[in-house]
Amino acid sequence: MRIGIAGAGAFGAALAVALARTGREVTLWARDAAAVDKARESRRVERLPEIDLPASIDIVSDLDALLPCDTILLALPAQATRGFVTAHAEALAGKVLVACAKGIDLTRLTGQTAIIAEAVPSATPALLTGPSFAADIARGLPTALTLACIDEGCGAALQAALSTPGLRLYRTADVIGAELGGALKNVIAIACGACIGAGFGDSARAALMTRGFAEMQRLAASLGARPETLMGLSGFGDLVLTCSSELSRNYRYGLALGRGESFDTATTVEGAATARAVTDLAAARGLDLPISAVTARMVAHDLTPHQALDALINRPLKEESE
Ligand SMILES: NC(=O)C1=CN([C@@H]2O[C@H](COP(=O)(O)OP(=O)(O)OC[C@H]3O[C@@H](n4cnc5c(N)ncnc54)[C@H](O)[C@@H]3O)[C@@H](O)[C@H]2O)C=CC1
Ligand SMILES: O=C(CO)COP(=O)(O)O
Image (cartoon, rainbow, N blue to C red):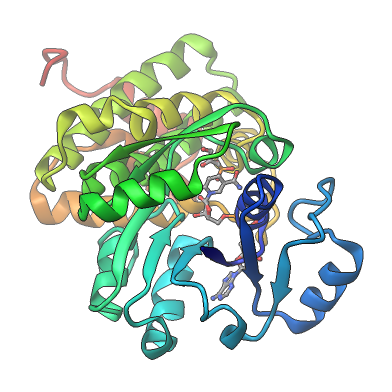
């Protein structure tokens, strides 16, 4: 089975490397023909600069070259997925489309698999998520991720097709829970970065991670996720990684906010748009998600980190379980 990957950024390239190294046939598609020519020659991509791409990876810019693959991983930024699957809906009909992005679509306020299902109803949507930095996967460091698919037979086939000796995939049918964990942890990671950047300390970060996790659980439960999914790799696991490592772009963006520094706008920071989406979802569902709310306002430069802290710490006292 040849595996297609749409998006030759850090994650798409890293997955291509991991799969190709274990003998899988891989086609890696990117939209920019000049960048593809360069990558074919140098066997490197800009977003994963220190990793050599095995010669067996077919790097292409023509979408037709991706279409012989029945399974295509979508490794695009979350807000780009809808445009991509809508523009290519006919070509993608009947495929297994594995979303790899971690974000809530701002226009639809849904996760990636709902976006796929709406645009390409005949496709089988699935999701690959969990704690992993692209560079770790590309280097073959041990990683455990979640493969989510409502169709359990297809989920099991994908789990086998995408696992490697270094990349261990666990399976779930709770797609909603898995995608919310991956999307919402990015919002909390921005908050944690801002906390450390502003000098509020590690104790405050631990409080933000814990209360932020409570917000993730609250929103996920209201959208029909299973509680245990949030406790797994895609939720708690990825929250821990992203809120504690400077390898995370969401965390580094938060650090910059906390320090009052600028941040490269070309960097993919999924939590920024997702913070807005979470605020809209919370308003629509009458949910109180204060950390996500102040994070959205910090991202919009509507609150400073000190104002955000004041807003959080001066809330009325309450039971921890509420
Ligand atoms: N980098 C990482 O460590 C991990 C990333 N992810 C997720 O994977 C997704 C992609 O992230 P990265 O690859 O890291 O981002 P990236 O910024 O490295 O790469 C994104 C790629 O998508 C391309 N792109 C953007 N808009 C496009 C469009 N409309 N059509 C076609 N191509 C488009 C860009 O040119 C770029 O090559 C994100 O949702 C991220 O959360 C998940 C796990 C790990
Ligand atoms: O999702 C990731 C780790 O699991 C990557 O995090 P960033 O997008 O914050 O770099």
